[in-house]
Image (cartoon, rainbow, N blue to C red; front, side, top):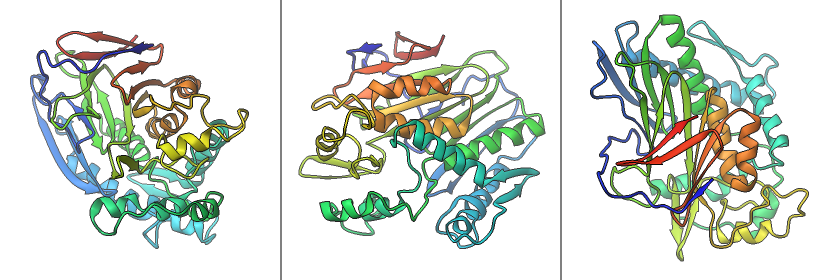
Length: 359
């Protein structure tokens, strides 16, 4: 469904955004007896853990994230399983964390399956291309932003020597957290891991969890819309506003299109999509003027929500909505002209604010 609306500034819902991407709005009026919150920097992102009850210290969940990153997921840690995978050092790529086995081979296999099923729109093996763009370094001020030459991009577009799990790492963490919360018998929790959120369990008063979608066009804490959820769901958002560098009026962001080698939906990317045969193109939706700036995925699996938000952003709504449906996930696209599109399993209503609910 497509809706030509911008977020209406009627009764503004002022929310506290966790890490500037998503907000879990259950921190007031929740009716829970005990609330514990802890925050920290993990995977170069602010993680915030809120737990209802005293069954577990939220700091333990942050520690689990640090351990997961350093020992399993980080390509910058020499002792991580991912580093061993790239060096062909060992065959067994499993790690026991909090009594739960993390199988890196299984996750990489799932990523590779999605690479095939998305016609190449999702690819964890383009670390060399990401390094050439170095959007992260430019955003942090560690280096100047320079657009790689076409020759350099052509050289690296088929380079699969560096595997980077940044597009799924937070989802893997949230899956682990869900298992730990199950083990501890926690009644309710909200975990914000950058652009990914786990809304877990339920609230005593029966009211829904509220997750805010950041307004890609705004500078305040007023969200574009609110997702209302009950029970356990994972929500991940990928957007061109998250990490980017602007030059000559073009926003070059961190979500690369593996098929073209450019950040998805930049002018160069759109032009190169038109040269890809229709049977191989990552999206049959080659906008010139209207294109995605934000994609939010709601799923029952953290890995999937994280991976699909990236894949669906690159694919565009023409293929992305149907692609997410194959995995039982729902999608909300926000386009650069302020319109939004939703998958069939989502109901949108413009009340005192824009609300998205699952059917």
